[in-house]
Image 1: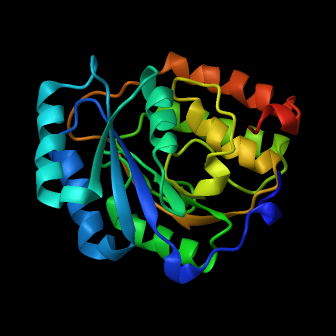
Image 2: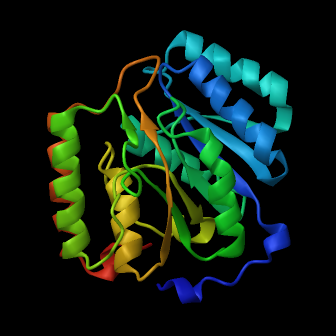
Length: 251
């Protein structure tokens, strides 16, 4: 499947569903939706808030229910079927009803103010993936470990070279996808490497990307669910996709 086989979309009918996975976020989730609604409400069809019945904190579930009462039909609460962030993402994808899908976080590590730029570019390029990139401008990381930053850069350079792309932020989970495309991806990962998988599979399929600069800041509440040593699994995921045939990567 190539991007050219996805029908061109009518820009006037372009709408967006937003993936917001929630474990221990409360005010960060509220703030994220508040900012997006202020600037982009007319384009947003649904906020897909994905919860875990066992892992999501009670206060986070209560916040999700409060938001559903406030924004009514724009909030869809989903309880994930599979574990971890991969399970949450797969559950969200099954519930997409809009022409486009925004992958982001609910902890403010992905700046919700950038949704405006992502949507504007997607409206002009409906068949491309729009990507937020932390490496396009200096000092775009706030509260990021120096060692982790160096390793991240080495990783980005290596896999960009391996896949012959200029894309320089393959792991930042802040992107807009044509919904028909992301629904076709055969996603195998259950933990955070799924975020690399959702970048590398489209690259293998010849999908075009457009990047915008974006900042990353450490979360203000809760704890990260992606430990340092678990990041090395990304390498295995990258090589698996590189050596896979396209038939094994799409449904």
